[in-house]
Image (cartoon, rainbow, N blue to C red; front, side, top):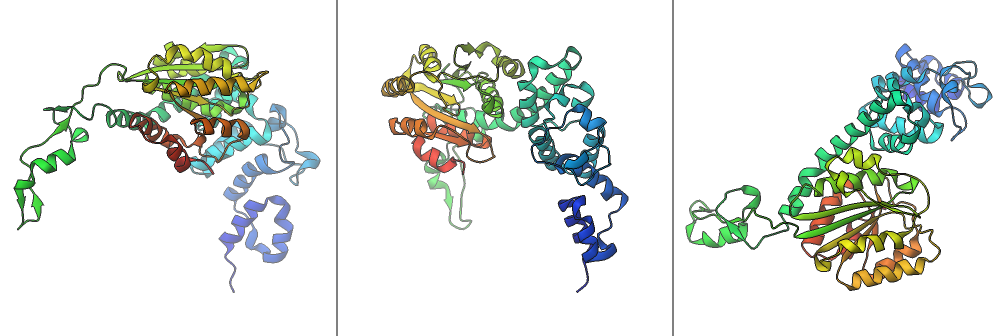
Length: 403
């Protein structure tokens, strides 16, 4: 059976340089890499050769030999800028984002993001924006503009993806009993239009010919619903906070929704609502790290729950409450839910599977009527629509729960 040399070379790239001799013994010259593939191999080796989770500092990336921890002994690490150029040239965008994520998580490359010339070359992603926000107090003056630009690019991209869906969720859920002469396809009342035109059915064509069209009203009363977003500032929630901040900024532009956004830790609650006009400012206002007190955050947010039946309280956090008495938070939520407030706990806003969280507290809150679950970003507008339409949030949670 003939050897598929391209397939062999792919496996050689996957297995790394340590497999070179064994593969050469098996396949001969069939595993010899081209010049381009050798450069690709170098880029992958810089990230994946050596001990897993072995942190590499700037000097390692730019000057030192890999040494005993890697089969590529004797070869220098490529400079970071060159490495970024390599992966962008050799791999598609989604793979580049993954490689950058691994560079941060496996090789301690966060500090390297503080250099403006490097930030200009990275592929923007939620993980990189989260890393920049986590390190914002360490960013030197020369790199602050680049750091903000990277976060702004991520925010703009996510906002463009989510904003129209949030608008549809609000428009499709409110004021659906009023009708208007203003003609707009998204506001077409299909059932009423069909009923009014049944007499115009043409059997020969098998078609209903509409003569009278009915449209829902586009007018929304100010602040029909009240959405409160409370974000846990612990370091594990950094990516979720980006989505939470963007969600708050989008909702703040909609007259039908009164929006409040707060961030909390173990000692204080910071009201970020006034920053919703600029979600980048909002995100830079979050202080990542530390413990958290969910009871304190909820007590603060109670002042905004002036219309309980029309209030949605969203807690974005892993529920690892470090306050001295977790039971008081459960009692507080029992009181809040008993008043008619709708509440959900988003353990993470992510597409990376079920997050680590306090399962015991999540179950207690779920029994009270506050479902707690991880949610992919694309389903956030559906969550809002489910609340505004009065749907069962427990059922929604079971449908979108991350596995």
